[in-house]
Image (cartoon, rainbow, N blue to C red; front, side):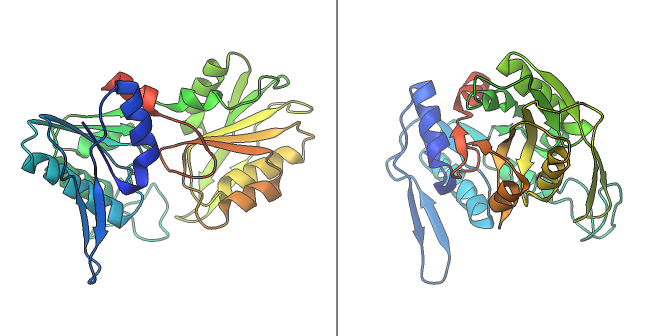
Length: 291
């Protein structure tokens, strides 16, 4: 039986369809003092799959409560699916504004802290395209990443002209290659990206000729959209054809969507790990295969 966090109802429903498993009647309440309660009063099964993207502190707490609710009903096996794992990018002890390469004694490794908390109520964890697969090592139970990047090829137009699949840096090139392979044709390349601080990034264009060619810029997550929009602006200076943006996790905080539109992006496609208007495809088939 599948228990869904309030922020992951679409992907939980899609996963239930893929697995042909029932959805538990989960309830969400907020008490007058601000405390939350996520419960599953109708849950009766010896196997529970808790599906919850931890996109906020409230979502983190809901996840822990649903795990505990499943145990209260006597579930012998609890699997936790994190379509999006919050705090996964805080995988080193960094002070605010500090470059990624540094370290800061006295600051927490937040990814480790939340992983340990989640581990207490589950037997296994699956997390979709974490920023670094190594965060799975922080869990105290078996944990593995699920690669759903190939799903991003589905919403792309069939008539892309001599397409180039670009990643914002060499570290995300594997996502560009996965999307290209799923699409069936095209070249891949990446921008040179240098992180100057926790908030500043310098992007240098690649040498690939994009004149008149359609470009698909891929990444695991779009948060503020600043790096992605800067990359797209550089493409526009080179007489690029159409530009599409795809990402597994469309966080799109604040004005990220309009920022991308102003840079000249024709369309943005994301998955349902984070439920947004651009969530055009589900990661449920990839998760189902891993389960």
